[in-house]
Length: 338
Image (tube, rainbow, N blue to C red; front, top):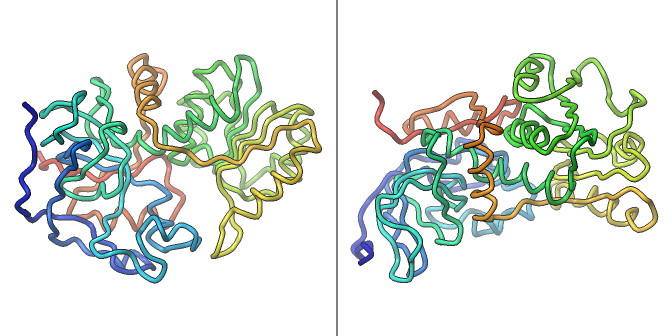
């Protein structure tokens, strides 16, 4: 028989988002512990991974992202940040059959920066047995985006030349490893201080963006995975092979629509050129978490973590993400300090 949560509300600690703006718009406070629906799992959070999207939601920019927080003028009441979680199953809904109480799992679900979070069963996967909870929490969102961007949108094949712009970021460190596991020759673009890091995880060549503009180097690549959006589409196209693929997952563009202008340009151009211009947004997918399990357990992928913060320093962790220029992942741990 499944163990279900009671309907009596219990308090729990969570990072609550009460206004759009800086990390000062967050509080660590007590709210009601969630109750899972019939097809949901209640997870006791042991660690939560932070991602760039958490910073976008914090500030509410571009404005198009605000519905994810529940409101155009302000977040919904008791909106909790975070989408990447690892922990133990505390309770399951009556329709849940593939997950049991006590299972070590990870998932992508809203509200991860809390003592407990509920997630749809279809998005919950067993975490790799070789990882700690902190390492596992780094994988949802970031590693999923890297896998989908390279394998699905980029269709990377062995022997291809792949360039990753933003290679030392959370997604970028996974992308370097996944591209290498797909048999590609990997060029990583990052700051010079992170050159050794990206080289150690699989990059064959590293370009320091502070010293060299890769779009003017005269080299061509079969696939460019652009995680930064700091070059116009035209410059990226001249760096592609004649039939290469450009995967766009980021970029500026203003407060309202963010990278929508770059996406629109690429969609307008794409039918008239031989190159494939592919805007990209990752999606939640349990099957991809299982695929990542295989990569982790084979040794092809290892999470790169810059810093693990205790839960009572979660606001400082979010300030770190909001400031940008992290190398790898920032993780918040809810486990007791040894």
